[in-house]
Length: 334
Image (cartoon, rainbow, N blue to C red; front, side, top):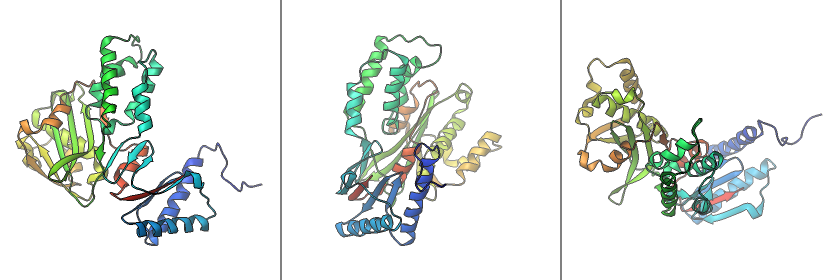
């Protein structure tokens, strides 16, 4: 006896199916058809013109037919400039939360239990990569969810809860990366936290691509200034490595000594490890005045209680953010 189809409920079913889909995408790439991505049964096709999209759709349908795979017509969307994908609204130049989730967050009632608080934080936290200062906004709410902390909803918690809801009313977003443009990394460090913002220039202005912020541990707060600034660069580069590998980028810092970071005399073991890791990347450091480093400085000075904000891609985000091209037409087939 042998199953002729993938069994429902099998623990490895999702990974097996994803492996199959990856093989199909790889076959398309080998045939010269690019700009096609898939997460499980969600397939996204990017193109710059109607004819290019038409040709790619034919290629996808041909390979699905070849391997006896079918689509549900009612779940397919063709020739769209904006799609909802894995919880995000994606267009040709930006990514933001989908409207339905914004409404869920806006209509969420103040939590009465730890479980409800965790649910709210989990829903909001999915979009933390789009929100600067997320950890500061949620610090007191997060404290309520910790072990051995009595759940007592106070005006302070209500204020934080309302502020977080208000943030989503603004429909926060970041721009999608343009792989033909260089990246700029703005870092900063304070006595409480370090931060990094990945940016790209568009129409003469720098726009955020990703946010990163980490609260310092007690031992890290004792680092001397130059070591702390180097730590901010190390952690930020590590957080954005998906974007920065094999590219030339610029790091903006308000620490002048870091312009000569390679000449640090007798570095400690931990600093040597940071320098070794940074040697894998191609970048230059540029000094900016502290008063011009407002956003990174703002993030680094939040007392966020060892909470880490990172849009280092998670399972869904690792797929979405690095690979969706700045395209005009998309197809979402499920």
